[in-house]
Structure formats: C-alpha cells, structure tokens
Length: 98
Image 1 (cartoon, rainbow, N blue to C red):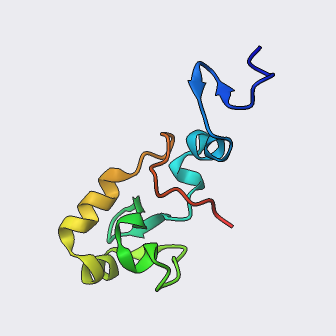
Image 2 (image 1 turned 45 degrees about the vertical axis):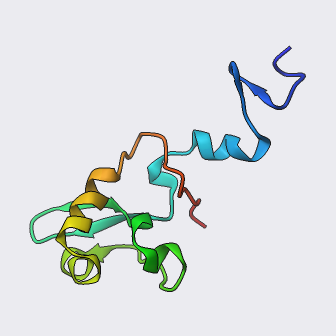
Image 3 (image 1 turned 30 degrees about the horizontal axis):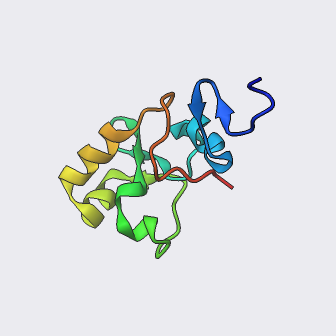
C-alpha cells in the first residue's frame, strides 16, 4: 500500500520535493566548507552568514579561520563549527552541491 501513494513514506506524510532534502546530509550541502586554522581543519556551515546565503558572495571551496573571523566574528565561527553534523540530517538551508 505504501508504494501506491507517493505522499506516504515510512509512516509520515512527505511532500514530493522534500524527500531529497530529508534524506540529505551536511556533507552534500554547498554551505559545508572546511575552515583552515593554524593547526587543524574543521568543517563549518556557512548558511548562517547572510553574505553567502543571499548569494552576494560565491561560496569558497575552503575558508581560512582569520577570514571567517573578519567577516562574522569569533562567536559566529564557533556557532558555524558546532552546527555541522557531517553524517547527520541537513538543516533547512540545505542546498545540493553542483
């Protein structure tokens, strides 16, 4: 019966366009960017920065920690690094790479 109804998916009603977004992980998102520090590299989510979210600036392949702090501040850097869950379900700002 579940295959007959496209909106019914695993005991949940899902809109057809949201299935890809619900199954996506942070690693597949274009806002998932490695932040290069002095001693280590950590992934971060750039979706919290309006400059990247609105498309005013192109999302880089990687970003230096000093540049991130200059753009948004130290608190925003900590928030962006803590937000990322590489294998976890992506947030509402998910946008596939491409």
